[in-house]
Length: 273
Image 1: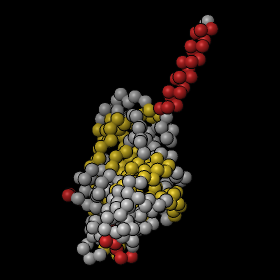
Image 2: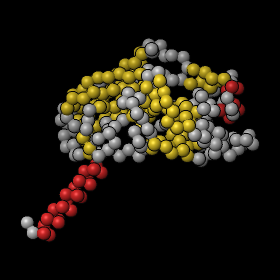
Image 3: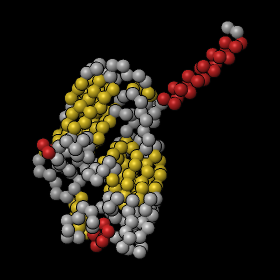
Image 4: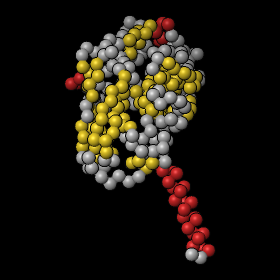
């Protein structure tokens, strides 16, 4: 091999190594073609009597006149329905995710976006308070609230997003920052230390504002639709653990075998604790 060939070989090796490194996603996941990928589909339902919603007295918190315009019982209380059940017992706000997949389809996670709107933290929309995060990736929280009728809140209703790592009954602060102006955005990395932990945001000004997030480390996850169904595609053939997580009802697990170009079905049923 001549000198030029040796140099070309070294350059090619460096480029290949850099390309492989770039393909590595958070948590050691590697992007690679999945020619014979399969699909996991299913539905999540709730069994039994739906728990009563929580209520909060607006008068005990700042900005009662503004906040009571949303999700109010008309009697001065914020109504928070943590367990939302739709038609045919479909359970909403559930994250379904798979573990043990180290290589597969592209994982382009651009961070997690949350809006403070109507004194609510909105993850996907007005009816959802569950989402996903990736460790060390960014979470962005935007304040969209202002109250022109209140001189102190005309340019923004003060919210104070408090980010927690939650593991069982214990929790620790990740960040705690004021968000006083409409249009202001907080951007912070999600730093979680425990494998079993989840991420939570609660407003220190309005404690009824909460949102919850399941950490994921690969693209094989889904947040259930309004009818409780989910579908995850491009899965490399094999046997894996699949989890269904609800912020207040907890975690369920199942084992699933994905055949090449096949479709496996796994359903989950939750009940009140």
